[in-house]
Length: 231
Ligand SMILES: [Zn+2]
Ligand SMILES: [Zn+2]
Image (tube, rainbow, N blue to C red; front, top):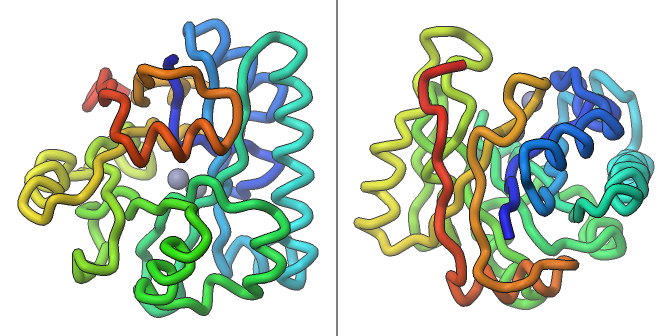
């Protein structure tokens, strides 16, 4: 099953221009079985753009997911709830979260104030998984690998923000090998031209986050990497 692991929609990410309904249709047309909606959980998005308190921000992100899922259900495309979390303490770094429930987000409180160490503890306790996104893009900080489950070793966002921006996917891949980190690949889709430029092919059926977590924990997939520089 072909899934994109890194997707934003306009309703939940200020920087994205493609709306839920168009997004699910575009993924269906590209032959995908589904995607994880990883809208930004960042202080800029929450406080500066949406001007929400943390619980309301989580509700907004979850409502956006439910709407996307409804559109997906109509046409047979699976949409799963994920996040792209920015931690205050590691600057511009982002972490892709898979399998965190809405209830957990509320229980945890403001996750943006967490450390990578705390993320690891919660992940081990509650079973969700997290991968540092585009770890060698400009302005990213190297995180001690002992605090990471995995890395996004292929980010499709080559030249998205700026034509000269380099994700350095090759370095991310070498780093993951060196420290035996689990690997993931995603488009970082923000607009129609980014749809499905990367993802993963699962070797098992993925219908919900439990299936997703099981497949990720078993590394039961391979990475799909298409356009690197051709955006
Ligand atoms: Zn964004
Ligand atoms: Zn992203």
